[in-house]
Amino acid sequence: MANVTFSSPKMKKDVTFYATAGDCDTLLATAKANKIPVDFECENGECGSCAVEVVVLSNREPMGMHLTEKEKTVLKLSGKISKQQIEDAELKDVPPPWRLACQYIVRDEDILVKF
Ligand code: FES
Image (cartoon, rainbow, N blue to C red; front, top):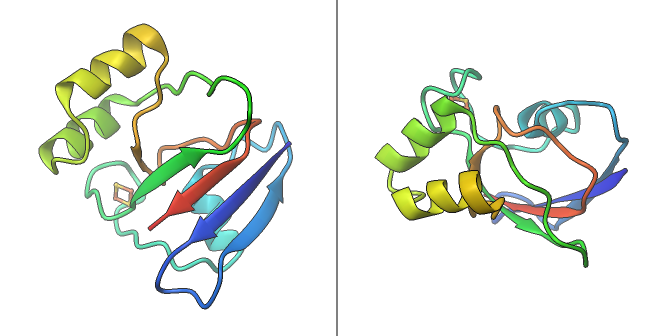
């Protein structure tokens, strides 16, 4: 169970949704289902158009975030995350600031999504 808040200059105000644990939806699917105007094209982790900044709002340690190989490649090539941030995510479970909304699975923690 988590609150997912979307924030963007494209929207009049921030919008928060309650995501239930076990939905296993991607962030992009959650955005589309709620008519949040996150950009996307391929929906397959290849174009990078759905890159969003994710800030964990929960008071506890951020959950380890598995980065898909596609995310690592696309986000690194676009300059959104560094090699060090990829290593920190893999070795220390430190979530990187940028994710691909079409690859990111909503977890049981409150997040702010900026795009
Ligand atoms: S929509 Fe293309 S990478 Fe997410």
